[in-house]
Image 1 (spheres, helix red, strand yellow):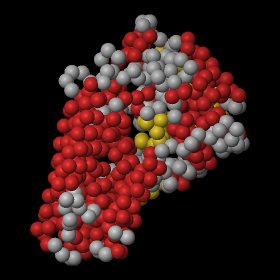
Image 2 (cartoon, rainbow, N blue to C red; image 1 turned 135 degrees about the vertical axis):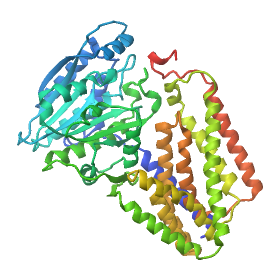
Image 3 (spheres, one colour; image 1 turned 180 degrees about the vertical axis):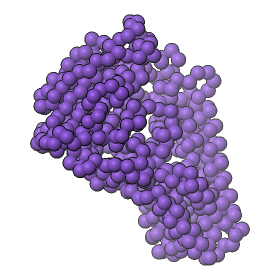
Length: 561
């Protein structure tokens, strides 16, 4: 098998793995066995709840709450509604959306309790919010979450009485300022009965549901996920990044308590976030299935846990293409760096010298710098002067991904494609990322795996040599890295791409490191021509984003911004 065939195989396998990692399962039909989660059943609730916008304190919201109450009662839950007064800040936002000023609107949480066999045990709380923003039916945010929890509770009830109480809390006023969750976790007597919390959210209308936030000291909490969820998604990298971002969900109000907390959400189809087009028909039923299946698996595990997961040191975790959750202690990153250093040392002894190594390091640094400059430049073209509508940028994410991919590949071709590296040169190419991995391991050990682990795998491939065994090692060890970086690049662009596509440089550089041992080089002329075509594609795509009119999916309250 020629070197280029190895490369083509690695790229094809990586693409397939990346697609699997980012694609939700198909929805299960409504006639499925009663003990399983079925998006087909949950969609009946989605259609009933999200038939129209239902702002907090509106008649539409009251009718929707009545539906939720009936559904809870039909599955044997003890149900009550808990009214409270919105904060002044929330009242102002509600008046802006509704056009009906009320200095003290009444909001209402809906709480259902499915009794367990031992009611003295701490309960498992499932949480979502039932209110929408102005002008959006909210089929995803957060009707998908509410419907997923109702279907989860139904499946638990169908399987027999749980070991401990299951509480379903459907909060009000989340869109206004987390009012319902704050009221429950500060004033509701039932909060003292809670031991674990699962919150579900959405920022879009599809894609995989991921675990993106946990309570602190999550070692035991993540072990429960790893052992119970059949098709998991999530990572300690996402948890670390979310801590840095200024974002909040209802789970924010539970952070100060003694609860074990999990936060799940999907962010695909981002143009539907708070959109008037976020209708039941636009919701990705696979995303709903993914959310519900993961939540049901974890809920069942928590209901039988004795005791519930407690505090343990934070761990590194990430799903391996949705097949399973890989979990290991944070200190293991130092071991991986030591293995990487050993592998790079073995490869270095195969010849080329330090001059070649420095050249390789320079090329990788050049890729990172040029890639960042290209992505910054084309993104600036896509924005243009004047105000930027955040929701319009969300609608542009698919094109921004094309822009970033074309620009990143152009940078790769200009810096690395004509290079036929010696082993020492490949070692040098790994050194900037090795150094970055060491910094991340020291400063953010639960997030550093995204560089540390690929660098170790690349070092092992280089240590295997240049012959058939080395090519096979580069294929076997490189394809999963390529797949993970494809998925990570997609997630990065969906998460921060509208404002910070430069962040895609990290998966670009790490993916390039996995490709280089199989790279046979191109002529400089061919590389420049291909890079020019890609740059034209990136710029052309950026211009379509800049010149297009405001997307028809933006929320009504932001259409004039």
